[in-house]
Image (cartoon, rainbow, N blue to C red; front, top):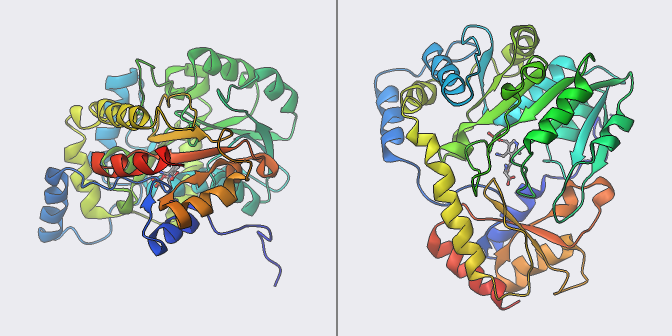
Amino acid sequence: HQSKLPNLETTIFSVMSALAHKHKAINLSQGFPDFKGDQKLIDLVSANMNAGYNYYAPMPGVLKLREAIAKKYDDLYSSTYNPDNEITVTAGATQAIYTAITALIRPGDEVIVFRPAYDCYIPSIELNGGKAISIQLHKPDYKIDWNNVAKAINNNTKMIIINTPHNPSGTVFSKEDMLQLQKLTNNTNIVVLSDEVYEHIIFDDEQHQSVCLFPELKSRSFITASFGKTFHNTGWKTGYCCAPKELMDEFVKVHQFNVFSVNHPIQLALAVYLEEPNHYLDLSQLFQEKRDLFLNLIKDSKFTFTPSKGTYFQALDYSNISNENDYDLAIRLTKEHGIASIPISVFNKNKLDEKMLRFCFAKTDDTLKRGAEILCNI
Ligand code: PMP
Ligand code: GLN
């Protein structure tokens, strides 16, 4: 048979976590907290399991959870999504992204993707016969020149994927970026897929720029989000998608047959847990303290950096340390120094190597201290 994705390699997150495990390295590669989430939430899930909610959840998600999600958008952004037909609970953001792309992209459609790009976007486009049009951004600020976006748009452009706060660079979109995007897509049929999984992890008084704050953008956008990132349980694989009804109608047609519905006891627990805004509003402070601890501990190392503005990742520039490409260096640091990271070139166009490694700081202070000590000796 002929592979549908002939050039695809195993995702870097599996590669680096397996290597870290094999060499007993400190794993600052794959993005997941190494500390336990709130016991209250875990207790809610187990209570729901014991109460017998172990059968299929409703196809678009538990209504109470969709209502709690709608309330969050209303409270935070004064933006209305109808829980009946504009919100679907998904198996993590990954499924939401795949489903949104599959619902809309036909063979020959072009999708604009900013690189470095989170690694599930392009294979999802290509599996559907779409063509990813990459716009490469560069260190240290990874700023978008919107003139380049204007030039990339043509009659085949069906979708633009954005991600703010941005994995892996830790940069965030400004209001001006959003206005530019809104202007470029106005009066077109282009749909925006806005991957907002790090919406609650944003630092230094930056404001999260959700597409839902910009009415014309909102009318053409899917938002994808992840409870795993917000509530420290990436292994539960629960997230959601919001979109105006006409887009959500198409999304649901795919959703009902690529997953049908997701984890019932977890959804019921999240519905209750989400009622308390501090459960997500406290997140930025927690991770800003971790970012500051990590950066303070490595300030005398040979790595250079621009502090992350959001996400729980810090990109470090190692050009003062080595000429090796970032992939080889990430492997060597894991094997020889006992610290694992993610080489940013894997997310770049043609694997452009800008001598940058990504480190996850969603770790206990002890893990960060041990990791920083190694980095200071490199
Ligand atoms: N998008 C980005 C930018 C991510 O970093 C991740 C990883 N959390 C995802 C999507 C996928 O999220 P999930 O684990 O909920 O599938
Ligand atoms: N989003 C996580 C990261 O960027 C990884 C998720 C995964 O392993 N697929 O590290």
